[in-house]
Amino acid sequence: MIDSMYVDIGTNEDTGRMSSEDYLQCNKWVNSLLTNKVSNLKFSVIENGVHTGKAWRIRFPAILDYLYNYEINEKSR
Image 1: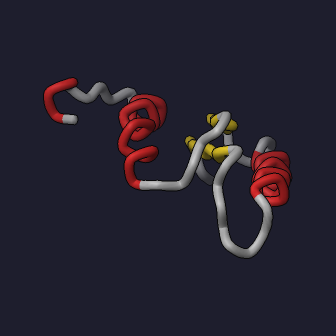
Image 2: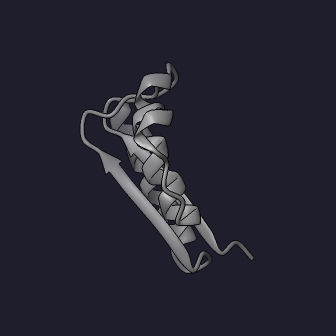
């Protein structure tokens, strides 16, 4: 069993195969399936969020903190 999971989705993620709205709805559906299976689940919709390395770099410290209660020093970013 998975104890903790973090999932986020941006409202402007371009998969090339489906629209951002369809991609968002698919992720919401997956979240609904996981809700009763993962005791510590965080699902976030990032308004105007995109799927880039820069976007992940900005969000990654909060993800680590959520999953591991791990704080990243500002200087290491």
